[in-house]
Image 1 (spheres, one colour):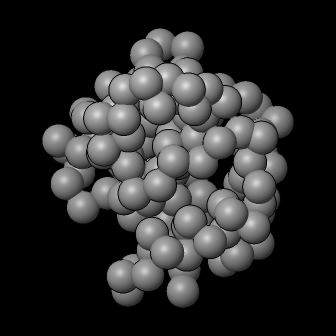
Image 2 (cartoon, one colour):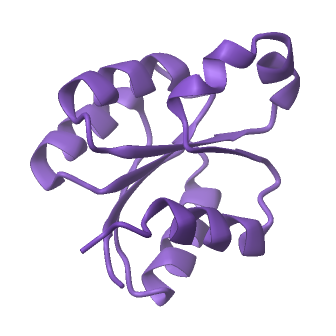
Image 3 (cartoon, helix red, strand yellow):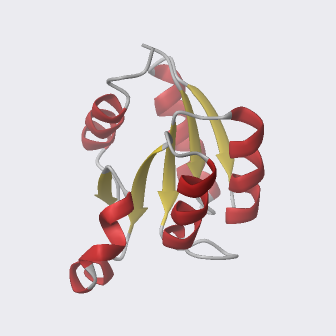
Length: 122
């Protein structure tokens, strides 16, 4: 099963690694380094899944998720964060996401989360 995925992370190295892993799984991957880039790429490419970093240079992944959800209601969202404590203290922040993955990412867990999130992908 092949789907389009948007990876949003300002860490260039991680973004490239995720892109390589997901492309190897036969997905089409677009990368964005900021929330602004992510919004325009989501509009242009209509991905089925977006992997969002919590901390982006221009706004946080929670605000971006709200905007993407409003414009693309069928978009599946997965949050990636090195700061899971923030979500434990405010669990409602994670409500928009199908999964929350903690950095450093476990690639097996990432693949499982992506596969489960895209189970309905045509």
